[in-house]
Image (cartoon, rainbow, N blue to C red; front, side):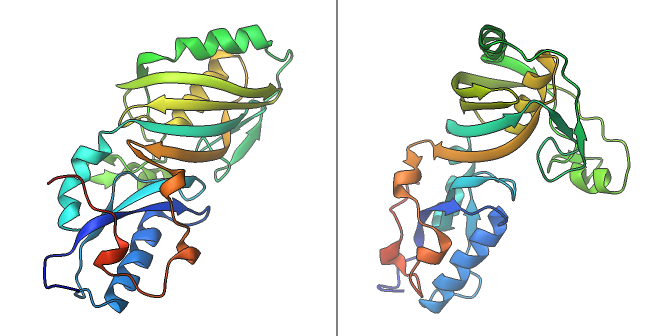
Length: 237
């Protein structure tokens, strides 16, 4: 690197649909190595986004990876579209989808009342297809094998839910929340509370702490190599 100092910093990435969070990290690592970084340069991120999801992924490099837990605890903002006419085995469009017969579309007032019930400290059951460990294995591995996955509900913090658009069966909301909140579970549970389906049709993370989309790079927009000068300074270690 430029001065022999230990590599440290971060990149705010706009993760594309179809990429895993680790795909983005691998891309950054490869470009850093082209720029002269050691082969085993540390690269991590501050919270997984599902492959279907897009948006802010904070990538940590070198010594800044020590900040992972601190930054993962930051407030996050998502915009999501929920299809109230469907359910899914994964609670999003990537699973086995089931049409749900809804005999009466919920009114705007009913939607607003239900959304208000999910603000605060709520009990939330994570999706069966999640990265949580069950008996030493990832829940999604067990679910893919057809094994029953019973993940207990746990408390999570939802600071705000704003209704952006609603025309049955499509409901679009903005969610501000704390660490560990599953937006897939939130969509599922909101739909159930409305007597309807609840499957995420789209999900975009717009902010993680102070890092938002205005700071974000698309993978294809990165230069052919990355050096210390391309990284944002990390918060004080």
